[in-house]
Image 1: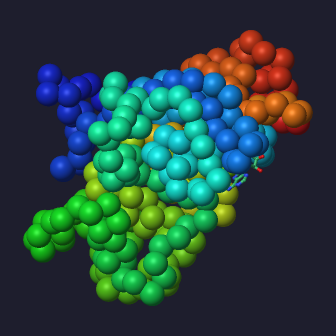
Image 2: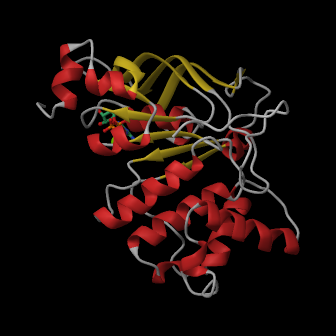
Length: 277
Ligand code: ADP
Ligand code: MG
């Protein structure tokens, strides 16, 4: 989908109520280590505001690690180290005056396995997104935010009459959309998704893809996927990661999705998108 026209204020037109404008993320020469094992070398990639960028490549090439450097989750792993910069609308999220919670609030994350709090109500699961990032809101505003977030995640109609039921009672696909709603509750400007559909059936996968389509233009999305059709369906930009034997992971090629799939420049990209390894 084409990103909606932006107003002079920088807000996207036609966004959900209360939504904020998407931000551009720029990774500059990002390297990453676990102990002395380097897993990423000098990865640079611009993820334009309001677009969906898909990260593709074989297992173990550092896609998840790269995603975690984009919202400072990487530094929570005790043995982990990194180098380089991540610019959020031009500001380095690793600058000394920047706090971890700033990054966490602006840059949401959704994981492979749906991980709602199973015993907590659907309502409280969405609100938990606020608590996890230290965002305080009043009672009335909370109700509105829960409806807004569930609507944006494409789940509101299915759960509006059962908000007090436990999150664990939902189907797998609904649980994943609940996790998306929880991430959206803080109105992040970027959403990172690490193989969000790998644990879902095809119908649920479609629903999540529809949700990603709806979010395009409102939020900058970076999605890791092993599903080439999915990358082609949801993204405007694609980056192909590879870690060749004994070397850290890096980007072989990136560009508009139709180029990566239709006219890749590197033979390794052509082989990968054609399913040859
Ligand atoms: P991908 O998501 O592309 O499959 P990952 O980013 O998960 O790749 O992993 C990249 C490399 O880093 C792999 O060699 C993996 O074994 C290693 N790795 C990932 N997480 C950790 C960790 N917590 N501790 C040590 N090594 C890790
Ligand atoms: Mg991974």
